[in-house]
Image 1 (cartoon, helix red, strand yellow):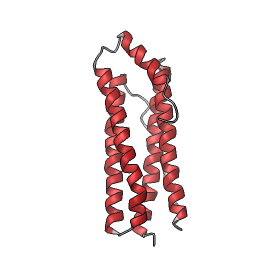
Image 2 (cartoon, rainbow, N blue to C red; image 1 turned 180 degrees about the horizontal axis):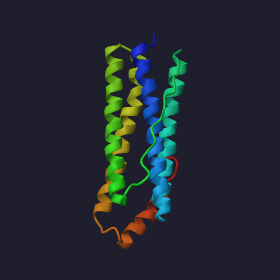
Image 3 (tube, rainbow, N blue to C red; image 1 turned 90 degrees about the vertical axis):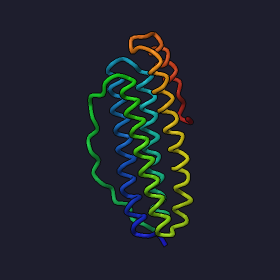
Length: 165
């Protein structure tokens, strides 16, 4: 049986995943505004990925006979800062999401909801990848000055991110 506590936590996580999409879309808009279209592209794909994560929870709740309850989404920030500051924010956000997923897993353990534990393992693995990707970009950005030509080269590299990544 699908426990009320797990259902409640998953509904909250749908909101959190959609908010994550909003944050990344706002970052993308910022990068577009400062003419870093590769960075904008990377963030836009990240936003789409977060929406996919929300929909995975949405379908899972429905598949288990639960009830999806959509919640209000806060407005994300509009102003962001330098590329390294933005990616540091993205990394911190992914670490926060990892903690949320781990907490959700703990609830599923406590409730002895074995199907949800199995489903959440995918998210746990995904968060390792999300943190790694953001951390690598932060470290790369820290290697050079914001005005350095390397920023433009990294911008081009990020523009090549495919939807499969």
